[in-house]
Image (tube, rainbow, N blue to C red; front, side, top):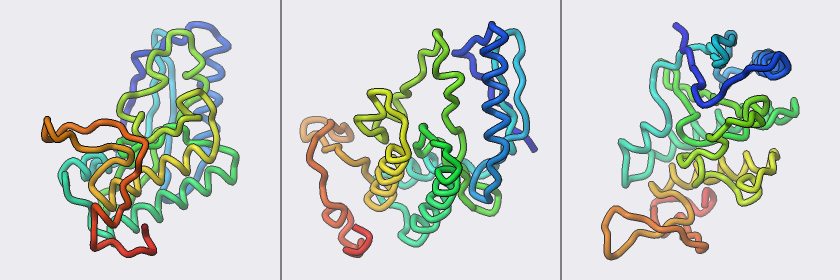
Length: 207
């Protein structure tokens, strides 16, 4: 089974843009790791880029977190997911490939429950003049200040993974505080609540 992703927000009209996109997808296809979602092919139809990948049938980490709210994910399960995604990131970084778009929506699961790192940021698309989705609201809580300012680095990926780990172990996104006046509403804060305060069962070593 395969998944076909059409990127409506982007139009590739010049030959150079088309070749850059197809070349970048070809490079991503060379990433062979058991915890990276395999890309199969890419094509452009009427200026719209399409990406074909293996179909991950068991949803995303975002789905799991939503089902758990406001409880954290089981510790052993969280450690396994972080291990698989972390190894995939390390593999990509060793090959000078930055993910650049790490968030729970881009961690998918196979039918066996194994985690897959998906949707690497395509720099060939993010430089397009009509790209209005360079910063997704869904990804904002997991982005470092440097990444928001446009800096792409391996350290940004590590920061994003740390934010995801915090949410899995605590049931809450980092740097958010619940509103007393509006239950269920959170506002941004500079102060990070210690994970063990939100999840007393969490070992200090993990914190």
